[in-house]
Length: 189
Length: 146
Image 1 (tube, rainbow over the protein chains, first blue to last red):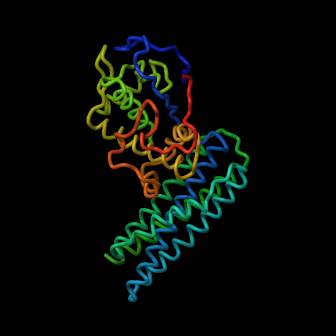
Image 2 (image 1 turned 90 degrees about the horizontal axis):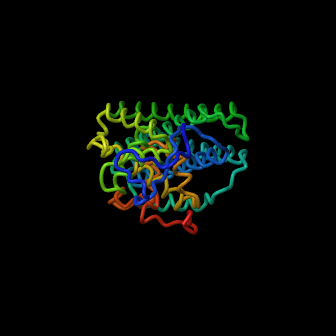
Image 3 (image 1 turned 30 degrees about the vertical axis):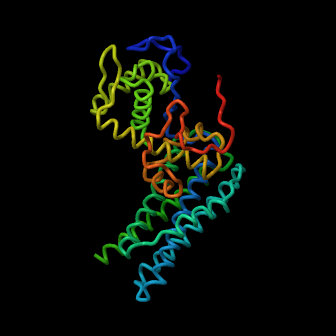
């Protein structure tokens, strides 16, 4: 890739600097530093927080409103909230190993809670669909992150194979979550 | 976000800033590439029906190209706002540029549920400031070279 080339005069560029400066983007799909990796893991924590809050809220509101609960759905939402909490802890451990700057997770928890305290699922099918989106999104996130780490030749302060192994385990659990929701959805249709 | 969408976003923003077709040189600057490499990318986007290049004028996105570019810009907006307003990252612009290639649209959509974006997004994106005009920066704005 060529960099720092002088301004060019192709096409209609008059070269006298009348146009506003453009912000250069660097297109790559790798993770190049501890800092960037830590930031992505933090985003993963927030995603898991969102999943946990949604599953918990949905679980709670359904439990209050409908005493004739579908036990499969109830178990699914309870399990999803537990699994997300576990994933969050695992991501936090990874970030600790990276010795990256901490962020105020309590504030994030409060923010996420505040957002989801106002929402209510419309029905079981809506809850299941939302849960499917949650699991698929988390799967996609870990899948992209794994690919970005695999394509990177950066030296992280955590063991690369150990990192990839942990991320692959998380991805696997999300895949299982997708299968579980799909199974329940199919059984209900 | 895939790389083609990042290219489309860059062209889209140059077009918006220059209020017309984007000159190849400007696109090259935006992508931090040589003009030859930028031309090659533009050619590929043309082959996919996402952009049209007119000699001596520059490149314009097709309707389909604009849709992809606006989606990409929305994703970028979400990442910037999330970094600035949820994680309190001071260097949110630089970090958003690093992260946009790894954060998929579906993931950004989930992050979007905890930030308040305006309905007009991505029209509210200020290309020169490289940020949404409603974004509340957590620190002093970057001063740049001026």
